Length: 608
Ligand code: M6R
Image (cartoon, rainbow, N blue to C red; front, side):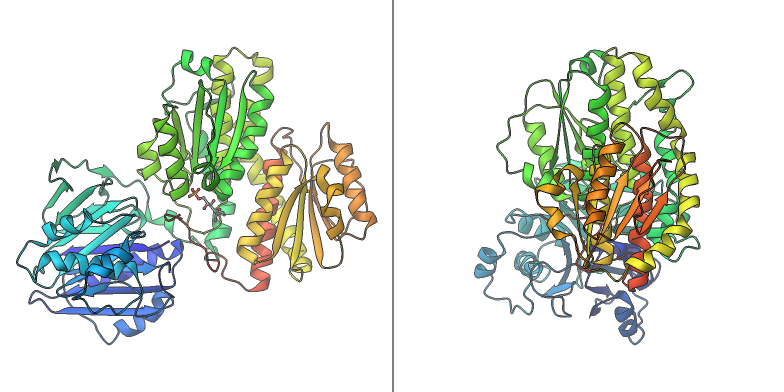
């Protein structure tokens, strides 16, 4: 979703703004812009529809040495993607960039009669509102910003500059993240710490309801009620290699292939295969509290939701007397759902900023239910607001399609389930097989990826021609199939849906024809025969099937088989998901689409 950068210091602001915006490209955007202000108070505003490359073309003719500036990548909400709707927006002497949505912009706009509106955006309304309090510099900029924000309903992360105060930046947030980078003789701002990597390792994460006045050597933070805030400087853990492609053509392939290592990071210090134990420090629940848990609510969107579904299937297999409900955050936030006592909620989010998931977290907290974050982005809003949590530690996930986060989210939640089971006194003979497989999973992932990448690449060529796909699975393979279908549809624009194998006869079987191909997950185990019968049903109707299996017994004459060789019994569906990730990747490459930034999508969905 939209990205913000800001700079005040001794260097050329334009350089940081452009490089910072490029780092935020992965979030998804459709226009971009920057403004810098010279010491003498002259502004240079450059905006362009489309990619940052378009902005750079214009920049070539407008190079400036200015030391202060702000920049933005816009993902259209109010008004089409266009140069006039791109940020920064100007009102009088000020320029503003904004992430989020001003909900009461119409009412505010009706009052701002003196401003000549040039765009269709809610952001320009906020710029005009700030300017109405600023009164051409009669009041300090920071005060004008505070007065304006007190009238605003909605969400925002903003950065403001004024030509009348050309050595400072004002930033504020409510519901949309902002990080302040603390440098030497420079202060940087970004909506995502990845833009700061390589410039500084020290960061201050602004909280909701805070506003900061920044100069190159000072950072003054206060609340909207003028209470001073003493800022905590934290270390940015990301390094440059983690946000570069590292020799791969796309971030998506890099992130798929780095899953052995990213999962190792998730497991580090938490799993002991030798003595058959799992220890998670982050949730902060005592043994007695873990023993009392009777109900788990797992909340997420998209891939995080699928991770919750899959983990739920596992946890209920080994944890007695516990019910598990995995819910879609955008639905759950408006349901009148009763949350039983002795519940714990798992809040699952790679970015830690997803608006719907965050809203559920706040709602669930209000009801006094303990909340545990399963989050990747360190210092993100969800990570800071949950009562306890387990970071998945997979490093930055740049491609819009979530892959390595999914695998680690599933395992992090299963580990949490295992800690509950341990506390409840479940026999180690039941838990040890899970713990042993989890400990061995990074190496199995490596084998499956290495062993299937070339096969999948070849197969993808045969299936890139289809516009429709059906994904099928049973038991744990069903949520895995759902995730496979989501991956294919979001990157390759193939219409893909998943069904539980048992549901085929209740409707989806009618779809099988030459317009569709089917991807069936057939794990070895007690339900193998049932899945094989379902494959037969599709085959008998002329289905174009790819079967992903670890069974030596599967011998039906389907079009394509991806056989994975693994010692894993319990987590084989998670390994099959790797094959589906590769399939989505290679089909998309064959179709020639933008792999890492699919159309219409954003990496971090910070608006509802
Ligand atoms: O950052 P989050 O995990 O909260 O994001 C949730 C979804 O937006 C995300 O998983 C989305 O579905 C991905 N694009 C899927 O690949």
